[in-house]
Length: 141
Image (cartoon, rainbow, N blue to C red; front, top):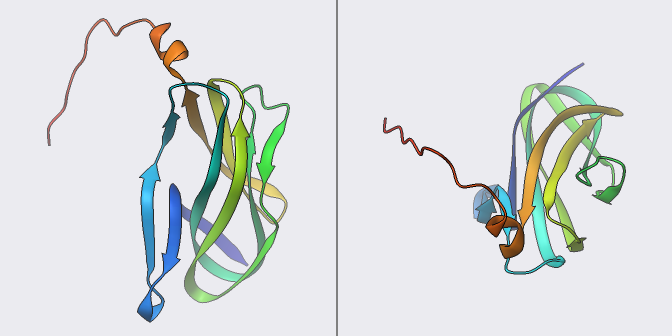
């Protein structure tokens, strides 16, 4: 049995359209607000999987010090035919981010962490305290 996580996206909402297409609204990578704590009414984490076999997946978000789980999804069973792919959407509601910092979004499959990436949460006060960049460079392809 094989399973590969192709990508993970965060967004405000997901809809299933005609033809089994998914529409993603409000894709984001960081949370910037005027004042903390902030409560997100709803957001989604989309994982795109490729592989085969039966697997159990879940998503969790850890605090900046990684000592607390802020929120975790219910485990989801996915079944993939050989060479198959699927999208798994985990919805979260009323999630509170109490402090500024780098939270960690983890994707778990079959009991092990497959991937994790940072989710920066900042408010105006924490952005004001950041040191300005000495130099800003831009690459255009």
